[in-house]
Image 1 (cartoon, rainbow, N blue to C red):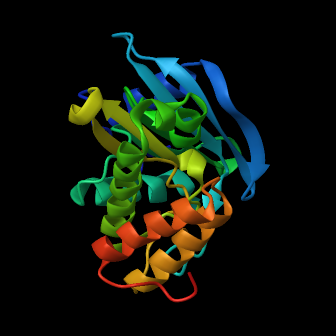
Image 2 (tube, helix red, strand yellow; image 1 turned 30 degrees about the vertical axis):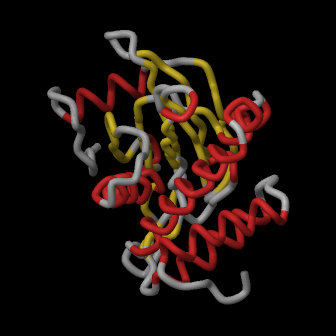
Length: 237
């Protein structure tokens, strides 16, 4: 049973795989059946008490022209995390990623990431009164920060592939006029690089508009900031 993707920990990859595979915690996303196998996410703690999220999969694969016989989806997510970090996009810190052949030659795969400390799902931020507390001028900063983050991802030809509001996280540091906003993205299981940055952009923006609660006025502001950062408009939006 071979580990295909190395760890960022000091221990040998095989030891890390066994450690995280056997470590159990609270299910954040119950295992569900799809892509010929199952996938779920647990909340766990490491030996130092740090909060981690472990995505564990059995037989959960994707196929492409490079991998016609299938490859664990966490390996594609691992590549996306590395690529987006090079673009200075805030994503969960990678702790461990690995895959091996288990019983009956099925893939067993793990992706372990650190929690996004201080970040809140954007819809939860709205629900908690973040917009009212900080005011409309600051809310425009939130929309602009998100637009610039998405434009940077798309200029790098990365398509998130499942861009819902629940995958957008916001962090506010400070109060009043000194408050600063940071944006993070997560869940890159379907993320891939496209040949065209416009195709990546069009797919994600249409998806985000369908799966978010912004009204038309807010969306037009977000899209204005996006066009400014991206350098052009996207047809059909």
